[in-house]
Length: 306
Image 1 (cartoon, rainbow, N blue to C red):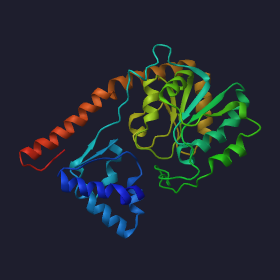
Image 2 (tube, helix red, strand yellow):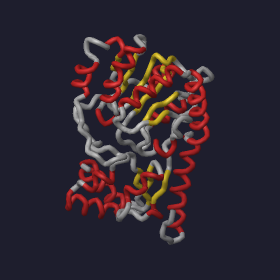
Image 3 (cartoon, rainbow, N blue to C red):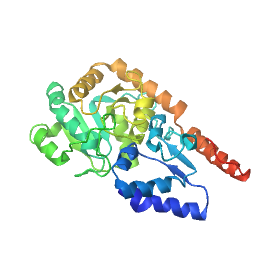
Image 4 (tube, one colour):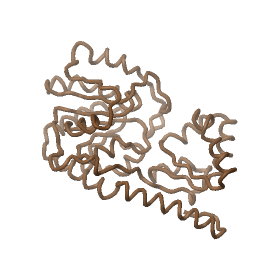
C-alpha cells in the first residue's frame, strides 16, 4: 500500500479538485489484501480516496471484488489488456524449439522463478540439451506480492540468488541463462525461438508477458491467478497448475516437450485468441466507450452507471 498512500490517493484528490471525474485503472491483483493489511488510518485514507473515484477499471471480472465496500460495482468496468498483434507476430512457424524454455517477468520468488529453478534439474537430466532462459529485473526482496492470490496464504519468499546456488550452480549452468532486462527486439527474438513460455506466478493482474506469448503463438504453462484464470482454458490456451506445484510444473514441461502436436495446436489457438480479443484497436475502443459514457452522463447531469 506504500504506492497508494504515498502517491495514488493524492493524485486522486488533486484530479478530483482540478477535473471532477477520476478514472482509476488497477494494474494488479493484490489490492484488496494489501488494503486489509494497511492499518486503520491507511484504510480510512484509501476509503476516502476511493469515494472520489468515478470509474474503476479492472483487468478481469474476477478482480472486481477488490473494490467491494470501496467503489460501487456499477462504477467498475472490466477492460482487458491489449497487445500489438502486428509486432508480436511469429507467422506460420510459431511453435519454436521445445529445447528453449522462456520466462519473462520479475526474477523473484513471487513470480515463480524459484519454483522453475527447483524443477529445472529433473528436466535437464531428462533432456540435457534444454535451456531455460530468464529475462527481467531481479528482485532480492518482494515489493508488492506477499500472498498466494488463490489461497491467501503468506508467501515464504526465497532469495533468487540463493536458489540459483542451491539448484543450478556448477551442475546445470549450461541449462540456465539469465539475460537481465532485454529490449523489445531481443524479446521478440526470444519469443520466436522458444517452444514453451512459463509463468508460474503466485499473483497477477493481467500479465502482458502472457498476452505477448499468446500473440506469438506459443504454448504456455502458467497459474490461474488474476485474469489468467479467466481467459486461459486449460489444455486449449495453456497447461495450468496451482502456484507452488513443482511436480505439476515438471510434468507440464515434459508433456509439451513430448507432444509437438499439442504445442502447435495450442500456439495456433493462442494466436487466433489474441487477434480476436486483445488487439490494441479492440481494447482502445472499449476504453474510449468507457470515457465517452462517463463524459456523456456528465454533460446530461446524470450520475454515472456502468
